[in-house]
Image (tube, rainbow, N blue to C red; front, top):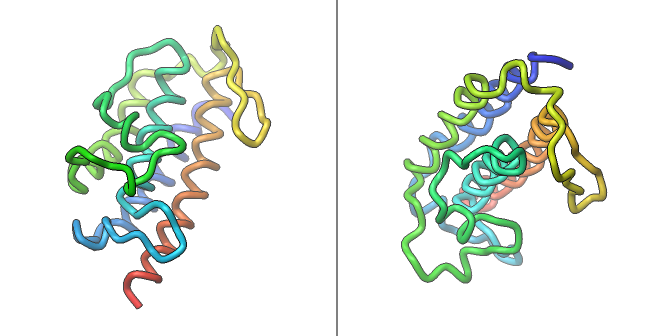
Length: 156
């Protein structure tokens, strides 16, 4: 696949940002009936996972606030938030910067093997930077679909 991954990350992220661009803070906080997360959580989760897969799990330092783990990691939910969560605009800013940061830090490193391979919740093992980045495209696409559905639910 090669370095085209950087263009794909930018394109997919553009689609995510486009679907989120007209949301208010209040809309981003609505948890639709029978669900446990909201749009803010999904956007923050995308940012958290992208950072973890592009940098942290590859032995590089995180480029986002440490608080993203407590708010947006797997198993977290806005139903359990007790502190001030990052503002929607702040999450959007992180999302806007990530593809550029990845493209500036990881060129020529896609074939690097990680010291500890990672097996996803669906059972797929990732062991190269390229594998991690490719998986984030799938991951973001899943959450894009959730955000799209949530928007329909809260705006109807």
